[in-house]
Length: 427
Image (cartoon, rainbow, N blue to C red):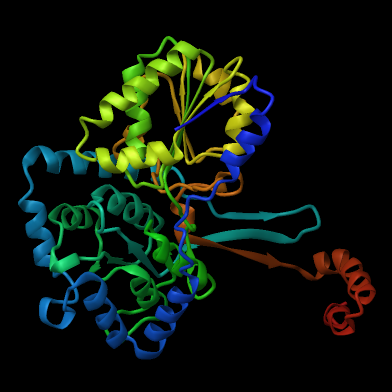
């Protein structure tokens, strides 16, 4: 774990190294992913079957390619009542939040008499990737599928790896709650390729969303243009800005909530009190020993964790913007004062009683967020990721006569006489 002091002469260089550190997988996966994509494009189902057998030890032909709707319903009906109620509450809150994101069509006539506007439509089909490796994530099912349904997507095809043929019932139950149409028992780059190109069994989709490992992220990057994607997501991260009035145990728990995801996750505390920093570090060490995920959390904390001492909490804000974190907690008495000055963060959690984990499950905003400093230019998953805008224009003879000569002048200046003629002939 790195300890930095903003007043130290070597802080600028040390902090720059922290910002620029790459936490994505070390191995160069692009060539391997490209080979998988080509194989699925050329061989279709046969390639998907071979890769699934090799990577997940699951024979699709023998054990089944998809999960029937009856099995998904049975998984939901078999949940403990309190767990089912929790999933349904989360789904309703996510649905309500995302319903407010639906954009309105526009149709106006300007001063020149030209009718202008835009119409929004959902894509026809969306592919949802749900990880199935280190843990099962029913919350990811809800966060990916519900915005698509709110947008009006007609077909939702979910892919999720099932190592050794084991299907997690929580994931299936969440798919049933969210209204997923198809659940395919495939994962990895081969699943992304199947969704993008289509196979005899799996019809292609228009957009692929959802988090995954380095192979999944690279497959989405390479296939962008064949399909739309939400983002290329990397390891999870959290930055906490906290003062000494916090309980160190609370802040330590918040830092570990991201560290337990993966050894490449990153947790950073920014504070203006050295004694509080020491107390949080001690709490992290104590809590790691009590976690079932302690080995993963310890690896992440030791490799990527950081505690940074700043002279004032306001002085932390430029550092936050340079980090552009996926998650930002402002655990202070007046979070709005700091919130107003933050420019770059995927999602922000305001106050001492708003742990990041509440956003992962139940608050409503999406937990699929930009990582790796991409919050500088990207946003979290939303209804808009499943929609596209079509503009429209309508000119009358009078309005074309008013604006057409200027268009003709510009076309001729660009050396495009046919453009100019197509307007001039109408005048």
